[in-house]
Length: 346
Image (cartoon, helix red, strand yellow):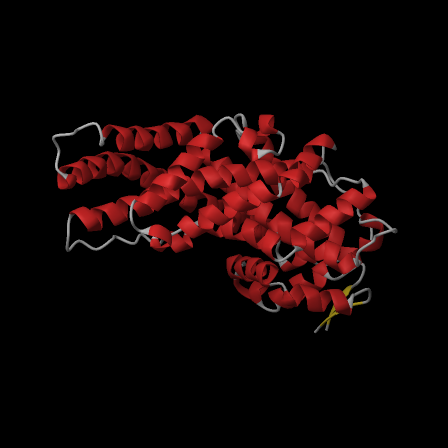
């Protein structure tokens, strides 16, 4: 049994109750080798709930998050947290309207997710704008990554919409269902949505606005007990802050690994979207075409774009998952998570 002399039992209960944190820890456990899986969940949850090991865990998350320096965010940061002012927001908005107009409605896989993500970015613009005004790395990079996620989810919806159109035009043909629910980008989108729907984002924002402090993604945090690390004069329970920070950083880590592997430019998303938009405009110009001919024309255009998207996304998905598994084994093993000063194994 593992004993931590500084274990915060209340915080431990909160960790175990957080489904997203536990989901990430179970994934880390599966990625461990042999005997390292034994008692992994117990060791990992206690590491989060122990001030002596907590900053150690955050330090490892920071190191993985340094990959953010290699991600191309294009013009996203120029909007300074207000997604409506993002140069290509209108294109994203038009794409969502196309998905809704195809006839599948919310039955189109992942359309509900992208609409929720869009709404969150719009509704929380004041928070994101505050982050840019105060140069808060966590808030700014959360915004940048969420907009990138919105772009990539648009691409996933192109795949969904193409399947729907194919089944509609070529009657009797069922959608291919390429396990998009298991795509890493879908998990990332759901993770960001969850952060807001559970109130954890609100918890972080209250802390930042009250304390006026920042946690940098590109710098190593000081190794301090949790109460010192997050500040003595918290207006909220320290446990709530710890859970919110670690939960968000798990999402940020996933997003960074994913978009780091894309090694592409934001322009590639725009080009894909423009091709679909042009096809939808041009299909209505052929007045002599029957409705079936118009649908077939649109399907042909969408299949060309969807095939490229499918190849790109599944390649990135495979590579990013492999990189995360490697990091989980090397940087988040039981030995790496335990505090040598306070942990005893009997």
